[in-house]
Image (tube, rainbow, N blue to C red):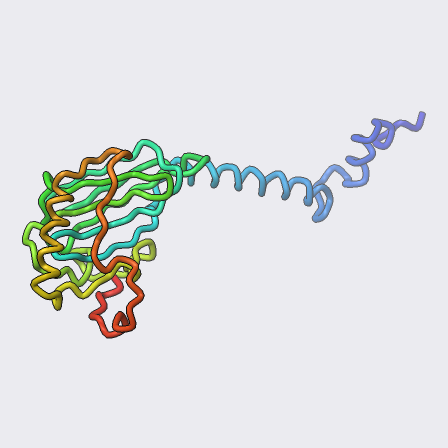
Amino acid sequence: MGLGRSGRGGEGRAWGRCGGRPRPGCGASLGGSIGTGVRRTVLAKTARNSRQPASAKWYDRRDYVFVEFCVEDSKDVNVNFEKSKLTFSCLGGSDNFKHLNEIDLFNNIDPNESKHKRTDRSILCCLRKGESGQAWPRLTKERAKLNWLSVDFNNWKDWEDDSDEDMSNFDRFSEMMNNMGGDDDVDLPEVDGADDDSPDSDDEKMPDLE
């Protein structure tokens, strides 16, 4: 009659060639590609459901510490200021990637006088120092290497060597900051020395990279 194993159509012939027992290379490439695709899908879903720290940069000023979280098209932004801790979370980008940053701060801040401002490119947090005029050599309480945190050298300034005239500028800047809200419509004030490419910038004191 002649049907046998090979008479079952394409499926039967494939089964016949494999001898009823999977052999290396027999359908392995198809199964492997399907398995890899499934694993990638699972990993992608896990990544979306988990919370990863957002990239951030910071710099120190006389009365404030500035932390900028670099998240474009952020949504559901939540910033919580505590006396010794900053917590930031949001959804970022078109895929709504979840971000969460919890920072134990180098020194205390005034939560009531700390503000934040969201733009389409980032979220800038202005932390009012608990003790004005005290320099922060780093942002975090513990000396640690954080791959998501860096120093904003473009805005860094050695304010400890400012003249009395510069002091008055910082006083005016502090008053402006006190009136700043957390809306998108509020403009951040200009800071003396921000983005200053003066030739003496290389001689200024640089902070720890942590």
